[in-house]
Length: 188
Image 1 (cartoon, helix red, strand yellow):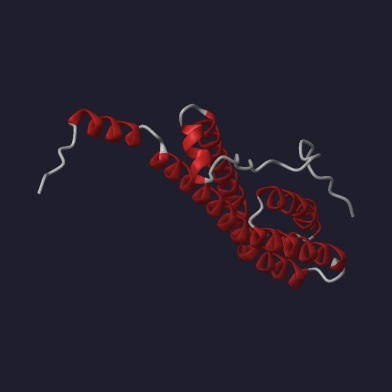
Image 2 (cartoon, helix red, strand yellow):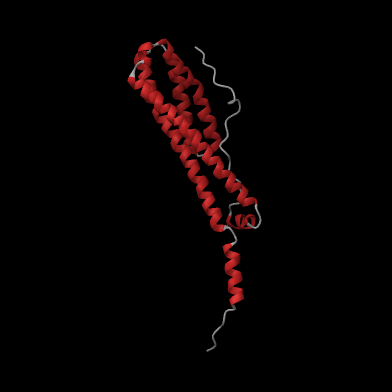
């Protein structure tokens, strides 16, 4: 029986071409994007979970602010639905839609000094502020991961590997909704 000998040059060329195809890097970048999106979802969910506690704390002191509570409940429901969808644009729009009623809720505290001095209210307000900061960091991290992924799959020869493996579609950035450049107006 005759043994086949493998040409070391051919073997080296195959190993080199496979190691330079970028498959593993594409997978790593794709997972980084997925993690970033999951981090945003977790922080938005944290925000959505804090809001009922904040609303109930304010509700205990204020009786006539039902329209604010209803608008917050509706906006929170939309945010929860957007989180479930996983679509970054939908999450950004729903998050922005929650800002105006939350701004009105926080403005109500000016009329209720006993609420402003409440330890529970201040703790919830601090938690909400911390969550807003976490959302901003998660959004920045996600957009950085999307930038790295999108740039990588466009480069040669990695774009060929991306097409072969089904990763050639650029990922979507988490962008602020239109009109978010201006602060929300607080109206009573």
